[in-house]
Length: 84
Image: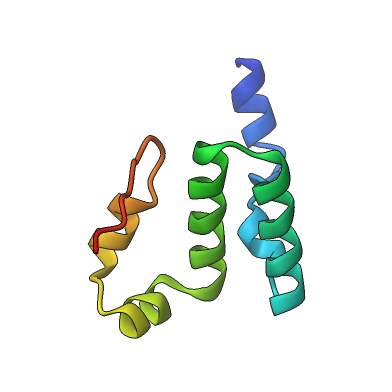
């Protein structure tokens, strides 16, 4: 059995930052850190993590954007743009 399969069988789970963004203060601290230290891709990823933490359904309802559109805009490699 390969090492990856052995690790998977240990019952470990993947780290997901969204699981720890459980308050407005944590979200603000995370976003501020990424804005100070990250690049554009990091910022897009952070917004995706925050949206996941809040809930894509809630974000969808509040913005009027469909959930699939949000997932697409916030996926790895996405390059969302703001239009006026």
